[in-house]
Length: 294
Image (cartoon, rainbow, N blue to C red; front, side, top):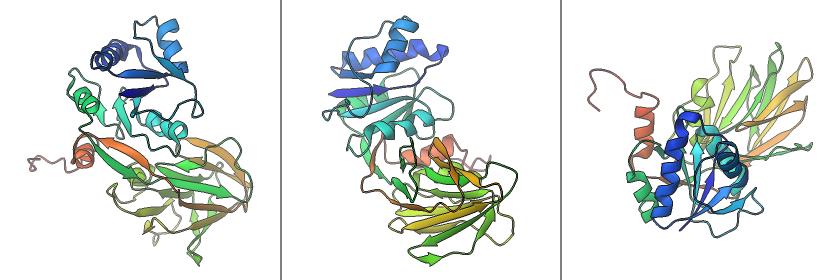
């Protein structure tokens, strides 16, 4: 089994555990492929004793014969993995070496049960929807695909007027701090914090949710994932911020954006069928009430 390891940074308190995890994979016969910057940081900067392996520096040299793409970190690291995997059908697992780690498949804690599950291939694959962003003007330097959400946000004190159409049908103008278009995966991220619903990952839907709307009769809207959404906005100061997951770029007034389902999904590794419900109970404290027994 070939496992690609991707991380950006690992805090000091996690480094010993990281070495144990890597060695556990090697002991089980895994062939490791390291993200180049991460490998040199661990070996040359932090002087960690980790097994050797081949290296990759981006999507171009990742190669096709990867059985698992393993993200070591938090949710930001997991989201960045999409920029490396792109439309390859490589299953992705996240191991939480960060804080909340909602998107991760397992927490990095003592024990090897989750390592055994991964190396035995006894896991579940969930197809996670990816959104694609295109524009009448070039979005320079930003990978135009999102696993969580696409948002347009104000960059000054003035609110935005945001016009949205769904399959050619125009919605009422949103007067707000911006707008979020979230996948079911992203329903527990930014969308949740602005009042959007929690949506099971297998649902074929997209959430349209305004950010701090300036009226009382606006609610998040759920549309089919196959819908094509067009967005334009206007700001008094002439600009806004386009965010695609954890990447962003400043944009100008009246730029038109088209957001639709990408022609590929992300293959998300879940260690058990109840992984999503376990995550929202354990990490978002869903149903946390002393009267509840689950």
